[in-house]
Image (cartoon, rainbow, N blue to C red):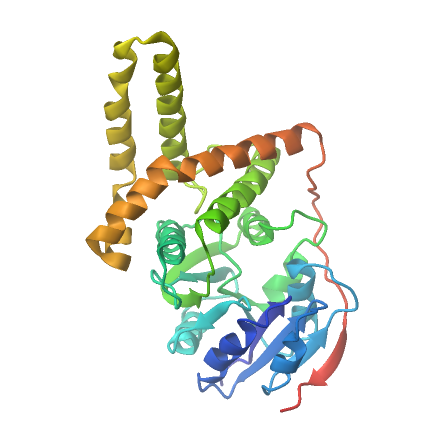
Length: 347
């Protein structure tokens, strides 16, 4: 007998993507499944779109964030297993069969995650860069990942409840990283299944790509300093990225000092440092090539090594400032929020 799977999708002002997300979910034939969309007080017409699909709609009483929305979905679910995805992600046709296989082969002590497809559904340089970038670093350690992301997270209900759900009094992002770390510290095993993929709908420009890097780095720094694992090899906060940032900063300092001193000897280490950084990140560059071809890979490598680190360091500075002022929010308690359910959405 198949276990009932609850697909839980938090939504906040996702009118541009929630319809496509639900289309991809219902395109998969799985009778032992319920689909729950938790709307976090959207103001953009999302509800009208959600109500077109035979899903269960839960409306939060006040805007509370993605963690609270996911917890509310889990609290109101009827399934034996929870499958969390995001409103801007599209499921692949094999998602259900992959999850069913996992449930058959693994016990509740094993939690499974998935990742982005190397190429996104919407083309564009920065969209492809981000999708390939995340795919590469999230699938680097499949048997022992540091964390599993909520864009494709499969967990049994009993395990989720034992862990107390996602923290709601926490940083605006990284709640899935925190949840994964709590799972690991409690003795659960995390596995990354690279075949469980979702297409993430990005809408990135150069500015948005850099802003995204600043924001994520800022909160990673706050979180890592609190955990005292700043140099850990952790998914999209991998050692490769950190080495790339150090190489960029060292070369920037050498270049600035050269401009003021005129000592050409300062430039000797520059190509050696760049070469070392390129070598460390060679597997990422191969992922770029597979995602978009040789020309794209060259451009993506140039962006990653020459400009992207500037945004990372801006995020580091913001994160350090936030941490030093003591305004970072971390606690040791999870919590499940309650919300009123509106019942099944009408067609």
